[in-house]
Image (tube, rainbow, N blue to C red; front, side, top):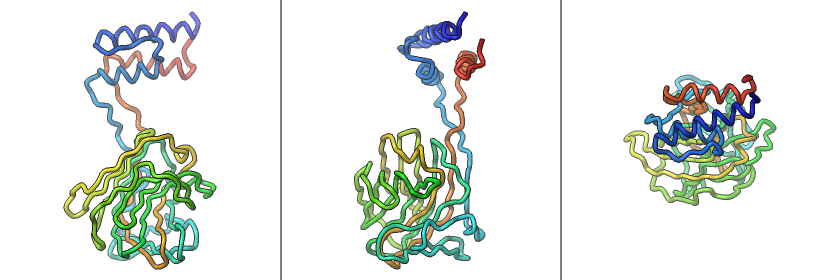
Length: 265
């Protein structure tokens, strides 16, 4: 029997079993779609276990693990347990990047920030490519109380995926930013760190070029000269851990993976 015939038979078997569970399925759906439908009916919500790629709790000075993107900022560690990122030019964006983190397809990033300057201060979480031409990156931006996820380049604001959302907040208050990228689904949450209160949630979808080009994460600041903020507890987690499907269909999925990888006969 040819490999194609084996795959067709496997698809038909999977589709039949899925249909008996009350979910519409056809062999023509393809093995990837059928595997997803198996997870849908398994009764278990497939939740990947995060793998920590980078974590800096700022209990000690680890500034050597970051590199400045350009010379238009200062980056220092404070012994009270945070970093200070200050803009030193009158326009544009500057910041630092993590030296070692490779950017996964699906990712969760958390960081605590405290804004120290009023006016046009924009703390940003950025994704940076290895050539530092920056490609397209989403930005988590604050200015005049407005937050958004932007799909632009490091030197250009680009377009807003979410639109600006006005958030009531204060200087000298710690906020936790949580960003999750699950394929093309983006979720960005802002919490009051002291109370744990959720302040705002933004969501967006779309095919983003940065997912192909970016290979590390950075913290940036815009715009005005002398504006600064503190950050700590930067954590990057990969969500690319494989799911664990229900045991009833584990063999079918394993066989599909074997054939797809070219090791079937």
